[in-house]
Image (cartoon, rainbow, N blue to C red; front, side, top):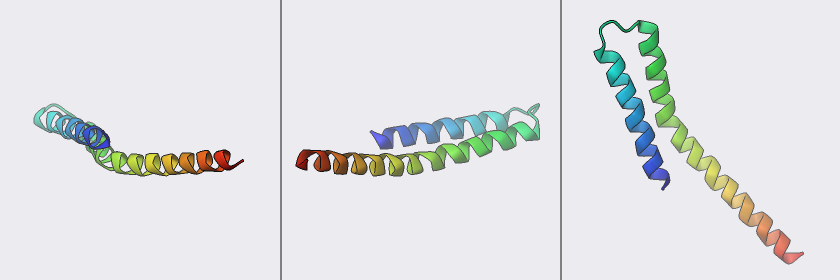
Length: 69
């Protein structure tokens, strides 16, 4: 499931950059912003999945702790 979201966000980021770079009337600032967003779209899913797995791990630890009490 996480890989689907990762691929989707990467595709959206790349499409945004492609649309921005093909338009000749687009300002450089807009292109810089969209490429930054594309980089974030690529980087965020990895950090997001790491955070999610860490949260799940903590959740399991809490459940085990509660079960022993």
